[in-house]
Length: 64
Image 1 (tube, rainbow, N blue to C red):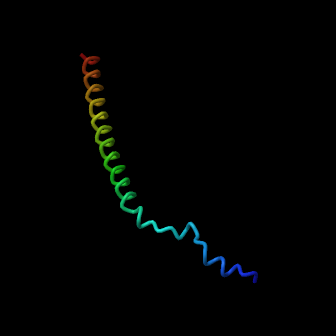
Image 2 (image 1 turned 30 degrees about the horizontal axis):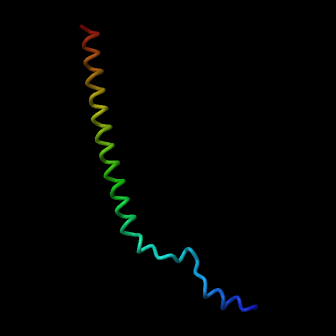
Image 3 (image 1 turned 90 degrees about the vertical axis):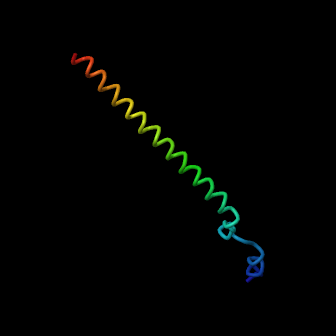
């Protein structure tokens, strides 16, 4: 109507940003996060195992 259709073609929406240029960086960050989560899970499991061992030792001391 007022020439807005012509102007509309000059502007691009933020939805049309090309994410392929950032994709390798995002994938790398996600991989780093997964590795960190795995390390933390291993540490947590080791901590739980040590706590169980200590609880068992305390029970043995109490029983004896």
